[in-house]
Image (tube, rainbow, N blue to C red; front, side, top):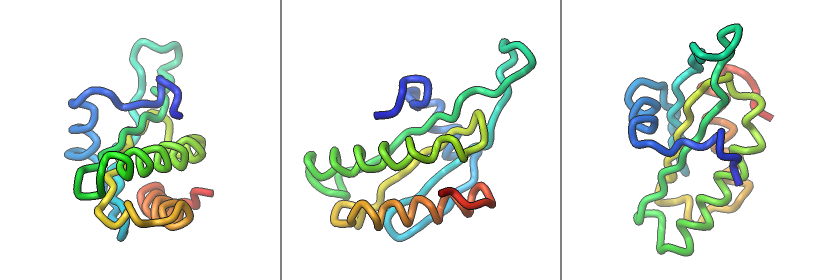
Length: 123
């Protein structure tokens, strides 16, 4: 589970990441990332924490399959929060093939997409 401070919750935050961020597509998922922003109210202008959200449509599968995919993606992103730029907004959109994919396949695609967006190794 992602801690509360690392979750995207509002529609506007999803829209910012998708419309104004960069995108990296892989066979099982698409990752949208908007680089970090500074918190004007924090001392020293420190950055917001990395926040992530997930989009898993009915095209992925039934409710049980969608929930399993969301849980796997949340777990994978949680492990990678420390390597993402502070203040980033990340939206992971699962594609239809992700319902049948293994955990390792999802991890491989997520790592490749994040590496492309950040320009550095993820794991």
